[in-house]
Image (cartoon, rainbow, N blue to C red):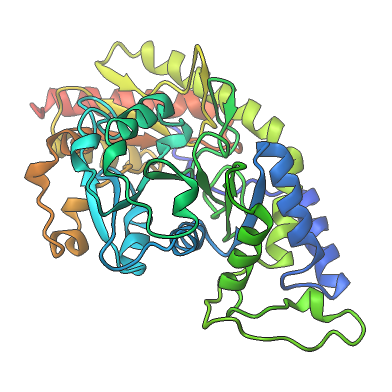
Length: 410
């Protein structure tokens, strides 16, 4: 008889520290953007070693505001991966630009760097690489690919003119705390968007941030512009207006409403203080998974999170069932669910989704992304898991796999 106790996919890890910090905000009278939001930004700057950080209501808002700050709009093109969540691409549509999708390399979750230069045109303003599962992309190969298309770069705004090639805006929703070649996530790309959604390693319930490294532009002016965007274009936020006689404000332009609040930032501050230990626990869980899955003797491709020169944030446990079909993968998910284990799939390639089919994308043009998706399963990975939970998940996968094979599934 198997243990039917449910193992959730990715619940938030909330302790008394988070509760106390949120209660402190509630009692303080500051529940919208205020002192804790600004402190959270400063502590994120220190943690990531980036030049500046601006917080938002979501990573999607951070990506969109970055594109708007760059002056990206109608007539422009932005490249992103076909293997990602919609947010990496929908923001391109939001600003009126044209999305261009890049297939993954064969057997990889990262875009095909060899194919990337051929997608760059004189209208290309940015590329949005995606740090899937918490592992940073190969930024050396990415920049080398963009260097090969440098002669096509046509900056069309003041901020774009600070760069001598296509701008790199990383979708690092998964990779806060990851490091590659000694560079923390937040410093490898020109701009980096983080997510603090409820399922992320570090959560503010909903929330996001944009980090950037120092460049040939005024960092303070960029921060001010992003803050204007996030709050209706209003020249003073609520905190600034509390100063004696400082009620007066202006609306510089019709902006948006996507600011982070102090209640969210309170959660984030407590989580950030715990984050080194959370990252260490995730690494221990990943390593236990690797050992447990290897012992099954099944043909699996498990994404490597740690190796020479790189360390992931350990966000998602991606496993491919080699030489198996989508039907086999789906059957395995159902059998594990019957065992009380919640799993997921990351990701359904964008051309399989109605919104992107309607834009003219065909999955036949992205065979490698399709192959990655069809036999991928994502196992539970979060800091509320025990070592025994990991062993149970692996054992359940092994039983489900064997049962499907016994029925002749492939």
